[in-house]
Structures are given as C-alpha cells and as structure tokens.
Image 1 (cartoon, helix red, strand yellow):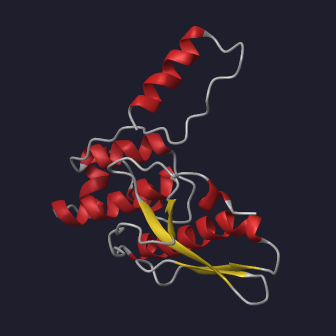
Image 2 (image 1 turned 180 degrees about the vertical axis):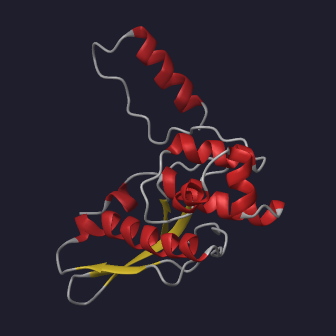
Length: 180
C-alpha cells in the first residue's frame, strides 16, 4: 500500500509553502523520511507503518520550521520536487509565521515596529513569532498586511461533490478545481 503522499497528487498553488520529501523504504520494512531543503526535518516509521509516513513527514517538517521561526531565521526556499519525492505543505498558521519572519526581514521591520503598527503589546507580537504558539490566522494576516504582504486563502484537494450536494456547493467545487 502506498501512503497518501504517494497515492494522491498534491496540488500546490504558487505562494504555497510545500517542501519536497523523500520517503525511502528500508530493508526492515520501515521508512525513512528526509527533506533535502530542511535537513533537520528527519523522521521515519516503524516496520509496516507506511500509512503513518504522511503524518510523520508533516510533523517533522513542522517541528523543523517552528525552530526556524523561533530563531527568526529562514530555511532554504522550497525547491521543485525531484523524481521519487513528494510535496509536503506547511500548515497555514506555520506558513504564515515563516512568511512573517521573511517579510519583516525584507522590509526591515523590527518586532517593536510591528507592534506599534498593529497597536499591540510587544509580547503579542512575540507570540505571533513563536513557532509553537497556536496563533489565529486572522492575527497573522493582519501582521502580514502591516509589513505589506497581501494574503489569500487557497483550497487544496477539494473533494468531488457527493450525490445530493447543492448546486451552489457543486459550483464552488468546480470553480476551485478549475483554479488548479
């Protein structure tokens, strides 16, 4: 059986942060997961647990990227996947935090300046820049706007409408799939 990372086409739109991962089968029927752009992101499965590889890949990537956010540094930009690799997207909150670190560096905005622009206490901005804090996406979008970044929501892997789905739901599904 192939993992969801291999068996489903991962649709990634421009502006989506997704890193290529290699899931390598080992002799003992376990799997090793590595990311060449984020070498700290390494994980694996126990023998026979290939079905857990997608979750482990996502967790390893999130842990490594949270470390970069916490250090206020940037990893390598995601490269194009090579043969045998699959794309692992960052969750939207962590991707927004990483983008905020990059945007602040690009625009030369400090945490204190961002706090002033957003009319927030400095500790609130510190939480936005904490890779392990469960920030609200709305607050991150406001922070990104404060440093000149416009954000938009992208839907990936939209399910096909089931029988009985409303015409409106079907129209939305068609529009989202056409955007791919």
